[in-house]
Image (cartoon, rainbow, N blue to C red):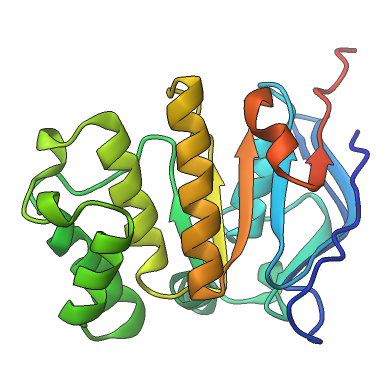
Length: 230
C-alpha cells in the first residue's frame, strides 16, 4: 500500500499531466501495486520510491500504457490510457512520453547522433540535426556524437539515453532506476543533469528507484511498500 504525497508544484494552470484514480494492480489474485488516487502536475520533479517488488515497474508500465491496471484508471495528458485503442496509445506514448530505461536500450549499430535521429523520426516524423547536435552538447557528449553504444562508458551511455528521451521534447520523462549502477558522485551528477535538461525543455520528470541516495533531491515523493506475503 502506498502513502503518496499529492504533487502540487505546477508551472502552468493546466490540470494534472498524470492522474491516477483508484489505481491498483493484481497478478495471480495477489495485489502487487496499490496507489489509489495520485496526481503529477506539469513541470514537477517526482520520485517513485520503493524496494524491489513494491510495484514501481508495474506502475511505470501502466503510466506508459504498456499495461492495463486491474482496478481504476490512469490518464496522461487528459487521455485515459486504458480507454485508447492500441494504435492511439502507442501514438500518445511516442508523442508525449520520453523513456529512460535502466538497461538504456540504445541501438548498438547506430551512433549517438543516429540513435537520437531515429527517436525523433519515429515520434515527430522528421529529423532536426541542429536540435540533435544541441541536445548532445547539452548532455556533454559532443565529443562522442559519432560513437557507438559499445564505445561509451556507462555514464556516457546513460547521458545518451537521457538525450534520446528528451530530443522529441516530450511532456513527460519517465526514468527507471537511472542511478542504480552509479557511485555517489555520478548518481548526483546524473540527477542534476536530468533536472537541468528537463527544466530546459519544459518536461515533467518521474523517476522510479529504490536508490535512497537520491530521495532527498525530490520534494515530491510517492512511496510504495512491498506487498505483505499472505
